[in-house]
Length: 118
Length: 107
Image 1 (cartoon, chains in turn orange, blue):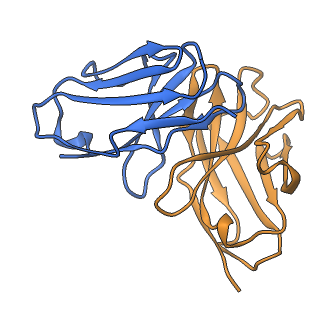
Image 2: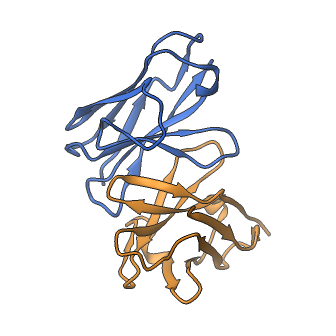
């Protein structure tokens, strides 16, 4: 059964870069039927799409975050990653990775909390 | 950007009752709409896609309807395990998407 697991620092200082990795197990990141994505949820707020990527390396970013985000993947490790630079307190959130199908986001990681604070 | 709104913010329902949740898009998303359930401390779970198709393993008491800009999620007979926040998501500009702010269902 496909599983996703986020990993990375839980605390990041303002103006620095947030880096997270999502490890895919029980399946391959090179499956051509799916995209892979990052979603975040600030405390007490709704879900926000950060961006998505395809096994070929194609990336799609939320316009509101595009200038600060880079998504990448490592097919040899079945992992994909998020880098968000110049973070502020507004970037404090639970960050989820998920599999994106034509019919929605059907498999999610458990989420990881990232706090931006000095 | 397509903006999603949901109503009500909170819905208090007794077990066995019917719950009706609404979602509206700022412009037409055709039937490219999904519903998710999220419980505290958990990731969202896909309930409905293509506006009205239940995802794998989702009980028949969950149903979705609508197209264009107006959508509804109905829980026909609420069970105690159905508490949580329900969010709609449009994927008309797939693979990017936007979510609504959520409706909290209190049992």
